[in-house]
Image (cartoon, rainbow, N blue to C red; front, top):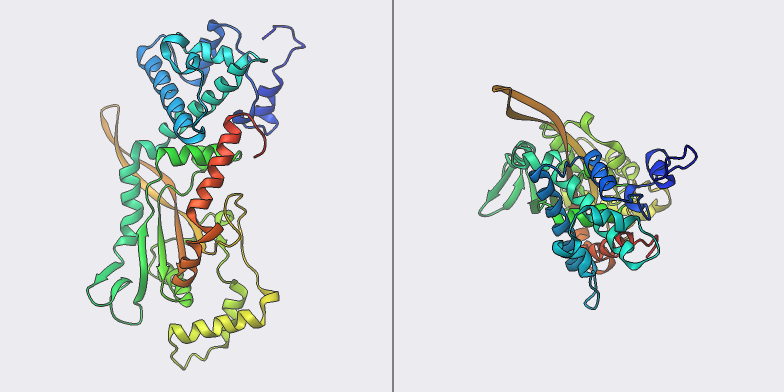
Length: 363
């Protein structure tokens, strides 16, 4: 970049104070290998250190593999000048090519750097370092309330009794693969690694609609979750409106006993009669179908990790988020088909990730 006091790197400045994500910058401004080394040093890697140099090349290899296997069609290929370390020679050449406008290599070089950047942040996240401890401390308090009965099946709470809630399905959220996380980060321009709030979580499918709310009640009354740690802006309820739910509850006599089937009928009846007053809470997600219905909240748990600092034992503490999804069985079956299905959701994500890596602003 020219040293003139009147020359500014507009894209870099926009990234700092203009709201532009670094992944959406069309080019960078590195003109020499020395500039490239200084750029990478500020980024966090000293190429004079063999360990750092090898780490950068490993991110290059992962990025190339990801683009080729996840984003390209069968007849597309990245030029070997950018994929082969021997042809590329020096990793700073990738930065120089990403700065040289007016040729096809620039587009590919930028795409590789975008994916490398995503891998760097994923693999240097707290979860990458302490995933076992985090998952264990978050999931244990929930799993201690899940019971398997040979006759009744899976229940939240004891197998029998008024507090027992029969579940059609309970599953801990499958650990999001690196590939899946990279795709999600590339697809959402506003998302960064510490904004991935669903790495840990559970998915609960109840037999009845009313039981969805019973699960929430059970979690609170048994102190499985602490609602002050909830991240309010991440909550989602497209399943049944809270205002109509509480109206239905208030209409019931406290002196009578009701089955979940009976309350379900009352809930559906009120919904059909007062649909125009229904108040849902929907967090916008570009890739989710409007047909997908569920209850979701993201809360946090204080995690404690035993580490050694200066040869002395030390306990490191931090809050870590996790997701709880709850849905009734009938809705769950609908969610698995058509545009609401997970496969369609992933297809939409991959298309957007490709568009962003290849330098396009829209699909």
